Length: 386
Image (cartoon, rainbow, N blue to C red):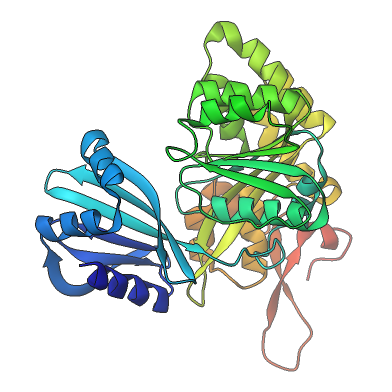
């Protein structure tokens, strides 16, 4: 069965898929460009999936799967391919998802992320969060940030992950990577211990509970740079989620602490492009005096406006601004732009040339018949209407 698994994985790789899904009693499926597609016509029996689990796990891991009803680990295929694996029990037996982890760490430039994100690698203390739904590329962005620091500085970096995905070799930095279950019992245990291990930078794979969030804020407050992820859709929701994790009697303290240490939020969504594949639409929050005041003053609802208005000066941007940029570049369609917009009604107005930051269609001199190009309304405000 392991040979059959390898065949499935190689097929996924050749089709540029991201996830392989195995389910007892179901046909194997592969996620390509965000869509699940069937692989072959034969269903896997419960016994076949169980045999795969027994074959690719150690006896201790298999026993843990039986006891905990789910298991996370890393599977290696040859020298070039690694996968983050999750086995779990469901009503028909075992299921599994294999997420491909690129061996080569892409640079921030290769990922075509906004230029302002480079500045997050120059920070000496504070908290930087990468957020988004599962499969939005959070780990890839974090790996690129750590890789840039590793190549350009001489620091001690500790990562705590479940499981370890990207492998970082010591370059300018000394990097210790710890896996939950294998090297430490929990994120909170590892993070608490890290404070005694002389780190400059701590990467926490996910801030998934109140204790981990509290310790991460403490680490950022005591002079460390902390990177982590959250499953939130945008910067405002990220702030609300962190503060909302705590009881009402603690929220003023946490709000003050978060306002002080939050240096950046990178929120990602993958958007279908015209040519197939997906492009990243990125919302970026960068700490400014105004952002700090908004968080401190419980005015989180004003954060999107601050990001919108800070695009030219600070490089911040909202999701809808990122979508408009992708539309201007011709990478996504108008239908997709509206479908993925945070505020479709407001986006429609901007696409029709109404409102600040809108795009309008302007007639352009050309030898062909009517040719139109997208222009920024702000750049044209002093020109006559065509």
